Image (cartoon, rainbow, N blue to C red; front, side):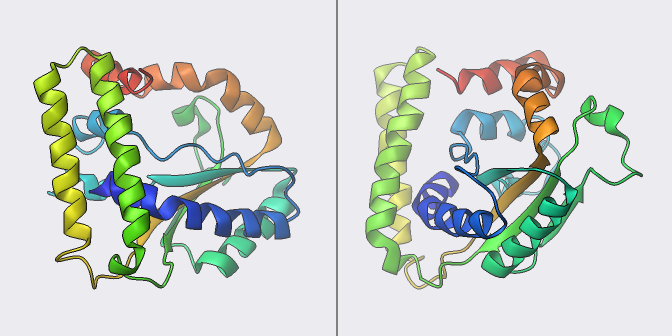
Length: 222
């Protein structure tokens, strides 16, 4: 259900983020990654969210995200102000540029991560076509990952049926509910973006609490 919601709302969020990024003086695309994947969420269930209250997927505050690469601290401050104009005040910010932050915890990497509530001012019922299209994408992605891992055809069919069943809930009991989702913008200056490109694969190894978590995380690349 979370994946369907994330894929249904992502185009609207990305459009708002791009508008704010442009007003802040950003050039090119704002480095939007794909919606957070099924296997990464699965890995976090057994690691970061292992002790969280149910429903644990509620802890995923970065299913829809964008990374803004900025020239310097002044432009970063301006960009965050533009994000507030477009999305409202953040509900959480982790500013790892602060002098008090111990960068050894992130192997020297610094960025500012802010979470906002993306609200298109529509109900899930009004987004029926977006939900239907998102369900198609989720079925393709999840089926592809599990097929790459060698899952039996019967299990793959069950997964597809499960996605269809969940998608139907958006047009039933959720029809009148407002379509909102927590999103994330990562603000980084260009030197840290250059560092991230070289170190992220190794960071995936470091962030794994155990071998199985790392296997599940990397399985999302199948």
